[in-house]
Amino acid sequence: MRKIVQISTSHQSGYEEEVSIFALCNDGTLWYTICGTDHVNIGALLPDSWTLVANVPQDFIEDDELFTQNGY
Image 1 (cartoon, rainbow, N blue to C red):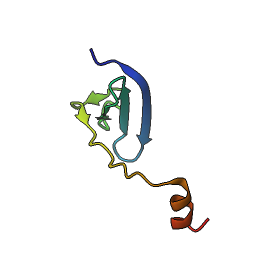
Image 2 (cartoon, rainbow, N blue to C red):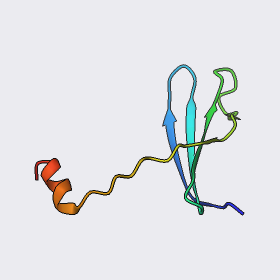
Image 3 (cartoon, helix red, strand yellow):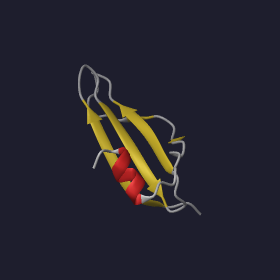
């Protein structure tokens, strides 16, 4: 069973408030949802469905190559 191991949030304000919630799970997957509030009922979060974030490609680079590529 997939379980959440870490939660992170991001808040944007403007005419309509928006909160992004990210959840890192024990199987290595990362999920997010965006909750918005309407300007009439500012306290009510309206959650959307959860979306799986695509894996970030990982290229194996030796430490020495990485420092050389970044100019260190």
